[in-house]
Length: 274
Ligand code: SF4
Ligand code: SF4
Ligand SMILES: [Zn+2]
Image (cartoon, rainbow, N blue to C red; front, top):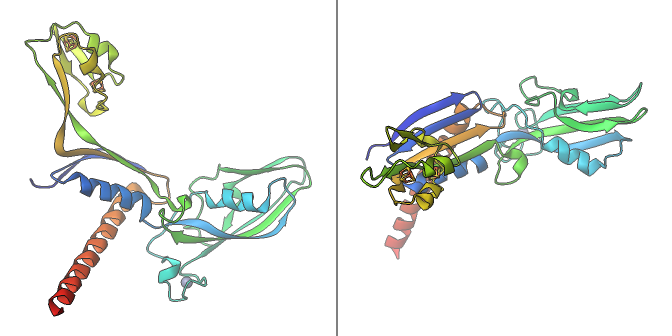
C-alpha cells in the first residue's frame, strides 16, 4: 500500500491527520519521537541570588523549569553536541533574569517578568504564575535555558501526540429496525437515524468503545477498524509550531534509521570475519 497523509485540521499548535499504508509500529515510533526526541528549550539551571518569598529555592527552580520556552532550533544546539563541550556558551544556553520585588503590596510574579537575553527564547505565555510575593519580599535569580529531550525530563517535552485506528462501522440494514438505542447511547454522537435506519454521521469522532454494539437489541451494528489507517493528533505546548515539531521528529527518526542500518551492515561485516 502507498503511504498517504491527509491533513484534516491544522492550527499553529495543533494538527490532526490521517496516515495510511504504514504498520502500527511506524505510527508509534513517530508518536514516541515527537514526545521524547525532539529537542526544545527549558530552564535547566537556576542561580538564586535572593529569595525571601515563601517558596523554597528548589520548588521555585522546578516551577521555572516547567515554563515552556519558544525554541529556535536553527540557532542553538544540544549542550552535549556543542563545541564548548557542554560547559555553556552562546550556542547552547540562554540566560534569563528574574528580578522582582513587592514594593507596594502583594505582587503576583508571572512568566512575563523573566527577562531573556535572546528575544527569540522567551516564555510561550506571559501569564504563567510563578509565585506570589507579599509586601517587602524579593526574588533575584539567573536562570539558564538549554535544549534537551523529553526522554530525559518532562520539562523538555514539546507537546502531545496520540493516534487511534481509523474506525469502521458496519451496519447490517436487514437487521436494523431503526430503534435508535445505539444513537442515544453513543458517547460521541457518531450515529443518527435517517429514513428509519441508522447511519454514521461523524465517523472520525468514534472512539471505538463498541458500546453501540453492546446495546443494539438485534446485533445489527459492528465496530471494526481499518488495518493500516490511523487518525493521528499532535498538539504542541508552544515551544515549536506543530509543523516544525512533526518535521523535526521525522528527521530524527530518519537519522535513527540510517544509524541502525549502518550498525546492521557493520554487524554483518563482523560476523563474516568470524
Ligand atoms: S440499536 Fe441496532 S437496531 Fe437499533 S437503530 Fe441501532 S443498529 Fe439499528
Ligand atoms: S464505538 Fe462507541 S463511539 Fe463509536 S459509534 Fe459505537 S458507541 Fe459511538
Ligand atoms: Zn556551548
